[in-house]
Amino acid sequence: MNQQLRVEPVPFIDVVSQRRRLGSLIDQAVGRVLEHCQFINGPEVMQFEADLAAFSGAKHVVACASGTDALLMVLMAKGIGPGDAVICPTFTFCATGEVVALTGASPVFVDVDEVTFNMDIESLKRGVATAKRLGLKLKAVIPVDLFGQPADHDAIAAIAAEEGMFVLDDAAQSFGASYKGRRLGTCGLATATSFFPAKPLGCYGDGGAIFTDDADLAETLRSVRVHGQGSDKYDNVRLGLTARLDTIQAAILIEKLKIFDDEIAARQRVADRYAQGLADVVTVPAVAPFGNSTWAQYTIRLPAGTDRDAFAASLKAKGVPTAVYYVKPMHLQTAYRHYPAADGGLPVSEKLSTEVISLPMHAYLDAPTQQRVIDAVRAALA
Image (cartoon, rainbow, N blue to C red):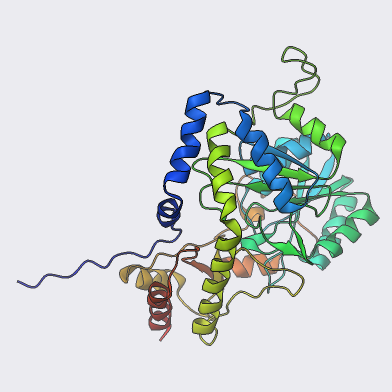
């Protein structure tokens, strides 16, 4: 009787190999928390904030419960609310626009650059004009450093300054990347990131952090993080959240941060191999000359006319998983379609949503396994 050998699937994101590498260090870190039992705001939280500040170059770091909370906390601390406009790219995860809507403000969606997938500067200008036409008060812009690489922060900052807006950098996918030689975390008024397990620096649950050089903002954020607490827990001076980072997650992240630079370098080697093996058959991602990428995702564009579902099915049959980020831009989603979009439309985002697909990407993707992925892509397009 003929038996088919089971094809071992390629991990899309390999947290198991990283866990194996860190081994007892993670067990010991968690064990120390279990010994002292300070599960909320334990010493590891403050240690992790200090480590993040040293890594990023930011003066202040406020750890929190998720990347979404990180974004929302900044908007709350700045008093964003009804009648205000916050400009966001549409080609990203919904959290970027969601936090704006939760404050009662209006997200104004703008398009992205066709090459980098990050906020398009001309569309940003049109978004500003749209907000003004609608009588909204321009308050902030949230560029997203998508898939691991930074947006054009100087160009965005110049427009923001001209219009009296502050910049909240959404670096949920890109913490560890650099913009013009400096780590993300120092662009704009504040930077938010996520430690969701699939992120380049991920914990074993939810987690996030905010980076800023503004001491007053950092103080307000620490209040917002704990129900708007003032001098004590029964003196709440503003509306707030329960948005603390668990001590156990901080302990885990302390150990992961120690190997993060090495993992970023490994991700770059994986990206280089992909580019070498696929550039002649698909559009491989391009990194702008002003930055580098942490390669949170490796997102290609398929040739015009390719059946993306059939392509994904072909790879799946060979044990190669794929994912589509983002199959529907935010301005077309049910919860957000009534919010304004930049005059002239968002055609690039709508086009990208039909063409992009992401391949396995992580620091532990060895060359032979990656060659399986490359061969599967080429075969599917042959």
